Length: 135
Image (cartoon, rainbow, N blue to C red; front, side):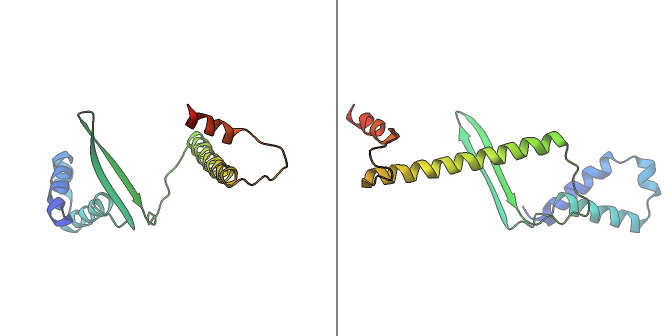
């Protein structure tokens, strides 16, 4: 759906919600400025990465939206301290998990090739992995 087909619906909805007295007092220039502001806030989608997918899952449809691009807003969104702490913890947890996965993968490759970094010392993950295969 292009912006030109969505544009009247957004504006019609705005004018339905707007008080009739306020709407009558607006000049044509004010209406045009308001309409331009509404369009720029609601319908602009200039993202470098714009992924929108929906998929069925046990009889219900879910959607996933991933947008990535530059932030052109003049005012920054206010975020609470709690949100910043939670986001920081999530990012650090993700980085720690990714690091541990990389280290585990490197350890498994090292063990599969048969390289001993410390003579006669093994963590035991490789032996456990092989025991799973033998069961």
